[in-house]
Structure formats: C-alpha cells, structure tokens
Image 1 (tube, rainbow, N blue to C red):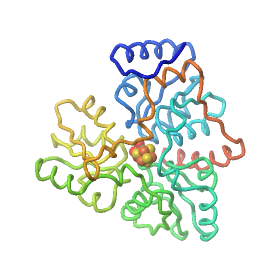
Image 2 (image 1 turned 120 degrees about the vertical axis):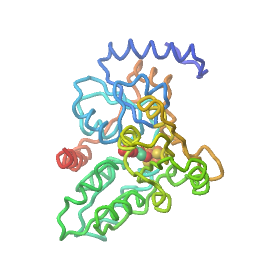
Image 3 (image 1 turned 60 degrees about the vertical axis):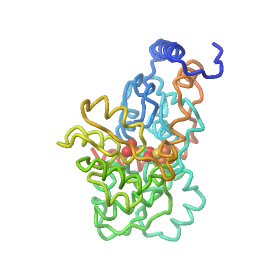
Length: 319
Ligand code: 13P
Ligand code: SF4
C-alpha cells in the first residue's frame, strides 16, 4: 500500500476508516484514544478516556497490538504496563511539553538536593523520570494519592507546577515543585474567559488543573478530562465554558446532547489552545501504523522495570 500525501477529503477518510476496521481485526489490535484526538480518531477508537483510564485499559487488554492515539508518554506507559505487546503510536513525534520540561539529568540533581522527599510524578513525563519516582499520579487521582502519603515525609512533585499548586491547595500538603508547565493550558486568555463569562452568565466554567492558578480561581469545577465530561453530564447547568484542549468538546457534544459547550481561545486569539502534539496523529497515520506495525514503542528493560513500580503503586492506591 502506498500512502500519498494527505488530502483530507471525506472519501479518503472513509477509505482509511474501512482499512483500519479490517486491519484491527487482522492484527488483533485495540485502538485507545485520548479526548484531545481529532474527532475522526475518537469516532473509530475502541476506547476513549483520560490518562488514568487509558493506562488501566492498556494494562488489562488481551489484544496483541495496542495502538495508542495520544502522546508519547501515554504510549510509553502502555508499553511499561504491557511489555509483551506491540504498542504503536501513529506519529512518534507526538511528544508533550510537560515531559520535555523535565529531562532526566537535571531531575536526578533536583532529587539529590531533596534526599528525604517522596517523589511523586505526574504521568506526563518520560519513562526515565518515572524510573526515578516513588509514585505516579494523573490529574484524576493526584489529590487523593497525595493525601494518602505519610504526613511526616516531605513531598517533591514534578513536572507540572500548576497541577502541583492545585494539589497543594486541595490536599493541604506542602509540595516542593519542579517548574514545568503545559504550553497549551498556559495559553488560555484571561481576557477572553472574562468576556465569555459576561456573555454567558449562567454557564459553568470547567477547567483542567494544568491551567494557570488565576484562571483556576475563575472556574466552577476543576478535574481531569473524564471528570470534566462527567460534570457536564451531571450538572444542572445547560452551558459550559471549557478551559482545556478543545478536542474534548467532541465527546461532550456527543455524550451530552442539548447542552452548549464553548471553548476558550489562546492569548491573542491564536489556535494554541489545541495541543500541537496530540494533533499530529491523523486517521491516515493511524491506518499506516496498523498496516506497517510501526512506529512501535521500544524501551530499555531496566528503565521499564524501574518505571513500572511507581505506576503499579498508583494503580493499587487509586483502585
Ligand atoms: P487527563 O489525564 O485529564 O486526560 O490529561 C492529560 C493531559 O495531557 C492533559 O493535558
Ligand atoms: Fe502535554 Fe499539554 Fe499536550 Fe497534554 S495538552 S499532551 S500536557 S502538551
């Protein structure tokens, strides 16, 4: 099969979708997708979820091939949990600014400065950082997990300082923060949010905890992508201003029909509220990776084993 340069016509999308259907059966593959993926990828996935739910799916699946439509650290986590399976990602360049903000060498030096600290790392980090951590968390379970830590031990939290500040406020635990952040969640315009709130005075503001603290102060509900989706369904409000990557609006509109969802633009009205890494994956690349079984995630076995322990601890503690 030859893959021509992408022309995203409805017909070619339909052809890719038909080939993906055939190949996923032939390869005994499961397609996992994060909410920030393009709608056509969400529509074809076997399972859509937040980071925690996708990790659980990756650990539990009996498929031979996991195609992870998300970013690299998510596919890498699937490989750490299921080393015997082939784990594919449609575009190997789909990274994450948070993971990039925490390189292993400087992080090891930071840890060495705080030898008595329990190291809690947000799942948005590389395997090399997970291998240096005591416990992994996601935005869905971070507050709950930090509350369970022994009260007499100081805690180091990496790599997202915005999530860390929010966890600190919610849990009442002092955290030593690594200074990383997400380029997408730091891009939302306060001015645009205030304008949207004035235009839609009855709308609830739903925010992801990776947002800057002064924007979280303006939110009515804060949580992981799955929690925001659930809140949209359970709330009595009928309109929502959504402070996270707008890919999730596709599921919100599908799962909660009849309610209104409004995205918040980035500063200067740019489209930087869309994650440039997540959006590298396309239906065509998904088709191609199922056809060629590449790119596949490969990991050093020693790093994998060291990274596995704190992920398993997370799965046990957040059961
Ligand atoms: P969730 O765990 O809420 O899905 O968030 C993942 C992520 O990358 C947010 O930017
Ligand atoms: Fe990483 Fe931010 Fe993209 Fe999430 S939205 S994958 S934290 S860069």
